[in-house]
Image (cartoon, rainbow, N blue to C red):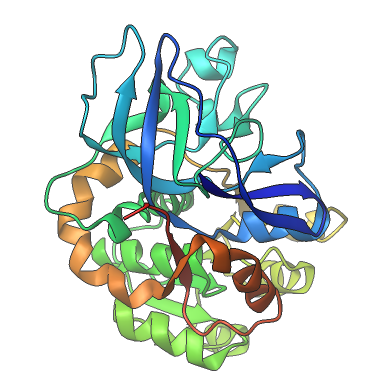
Length: 331
């Protein structure tokens, strides 16, 4: 079957590989329908930050159809369309037992610690799949995982009802946070150095384009950063109103960014947002209602053999839309 595998930093290859092994107990095999390229995929390719095995079929945002079931699997059936939980959890640590799998002691991700969805088929632990809602196109099902990340970030932010939410970075997560915030009744303002992308998100969500400087004049107490950029985070800490909350979703470089005195003196709450907890099931229930809004976030749909070129264009800033989808099925 055709696949896209990451070997090392900067080494991504389109290859023909053997079909996945038949599912063992508590496993399922999927025909992958549609997968999405995530910012963390690009970060891993560019930096090698999370390469724990080589080669590994990349991709953790995808949907598929169940083609084989291992023993003990009864929550999905042959032919079911499914959503994929990207987290690979130990299931035994205190965090997992408390339902906080996003901070599992040995957390890994599909496409890193096990093969992912940039292929025609994949075998996964059965706990990583759930039945998809009826009537939602496959291209929208592939957005379930980033929607869960966005919903988790909004929950962590916990803005007051109808409050202004400022979002820095209009990539897929920033755009989807804006969509969910607007749907929840919040005024939404977005910041991005790419004016065209910011306008796309604003138009799709009913929000407005702004700058951090303009937001200071208006006043804001809730912000989500999806850029991971030191200078953006520092600017938000300096600008946010007293008793405000800043949620960090973007992954940048480790290092000193924030003056803790400002957090103390102005009572600013700083929250990290990593992956998601139980939000994927909530997103599954929301998808039929969200589906009519999701095409605005899709940049293009490409075949598997076009993935390396798409990585290059993303890293060069040559993609105008938010999410590039990969059409993985043989048909």
